[in-house]
Image: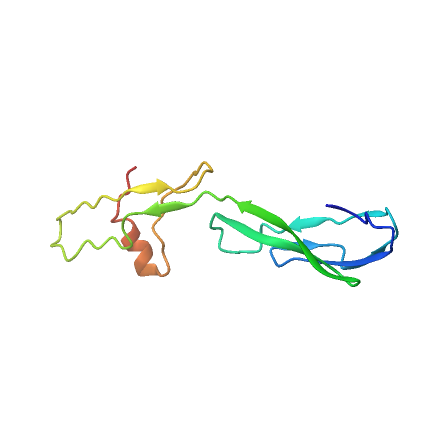
Length: 139
């Protein structure tokens, strides 16, 4: 963002914004018709959950010599391949030996990024690893 003093008088300004945005110009004094470039940065890793979202904030510019405050809208989008499942839990209930039960679930790519995925049965113990062989997962 280029900031220019259009006044014939010197002007001291401060630029601020909130995360996930940052600005490299905290405070600067500009002479008449002098300009300075402020670099505004967006940190897409601000939210560690990898959920797609839109961040909106304002770059606020205040002046030491004047009560006026100017604002510039800031927008940053993060896009991750996010999948939404119609079931939170696949409960097969109690089945007799040799019986089978099939459950279907729908998966929706709720983002605008292509999603590639693999199925795996989570195994956190020896018993779970043995049980993982009992489940077949088909697309």
